[in-house]
Image: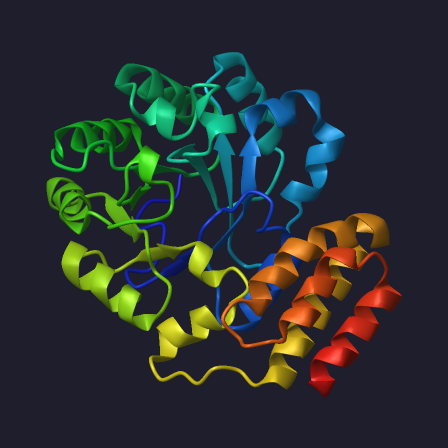
Amino acid sequence: MTTGLLYPADAIIAAPLSGFTDYPYRRVARRYGCRYAFTEMVDVASLTFARARGEKMLVRGADEDFLGIQIVGSNHEFIKVAVDVLNGYDFNVLDFNLGCPVPKVAKKGAGAELGRHLDQALGCFALIRERSRHRISAKIRIIAEDDPAPTLALAQGLAQIGAGAITVHGRIKEAFYSGPVYFDIIRAVREALPATQIIANGGIMDKAGYDLIRRETGCTAVMVARGAMGNPWLYRELADGDFLPPPREEVAQVMQDHIYDLIDFYGETTAMKLSRKLLHDYFKGRGFPKTLKNEISFLETRASFDIFISKLLEK
């Protein structure tokens, strides 16, 4: 088994985002400097009962020199099957999600909800450690805003079982993705586990947010998530420091490349449905006409998308 750090000390890691970080999404991110990336978060039940539907989520491109897979779930039998399936794939790390706050995950006792039940969470992670041929890591959320003890207990337990890295999102489950990030608790985890790589996560939308979380937590490696949605340029901004917003022509080209890749990957009908949320993300904060933004929801074919892009360049 390979030892040492999972990531370089100053790594900028693309988070696993359900419904987003498929191969076409990652190709765009890598163009702007993203090296360390994950597939979408995969429910262990989908690897147990819906293998065919889940195959696209496991695709690794020949151009990806680092790719992690993240699973979520709490059922031991499903976890066993999922890990056995993933043992047949080439990933650099298998990550276990103990931080997802969305209700459809939490109501199954998984994600951030599972993270609040220490014995059950560690039992699931131990099962992964026992069966996986990959290096393993975990992604957690802080459990209490005013007390680091429960978060520390979870992180220490994961480290003892064999987590090569632990990503800590500095918000509680109920906060979802907004509000203050509790840097002090991430820092407490890092200080308590000097032999384990601790990765800071939460609120990194730009270089200022990146510098803040590194300074306040003492973590050098970070994980970016929502800040890169519709903004693959974020990776270049964080790495280079100096940054100018991309011109409209470049944004249009990236949109076009992304959606064309999506069509090649999924087929036109599915790709155009998926494209709508992606295009809305690309439009955020860029001053594009509202009338053009309203057209996104009605794009159904590659031809209609081409007309949409031509209109964007005319404005």
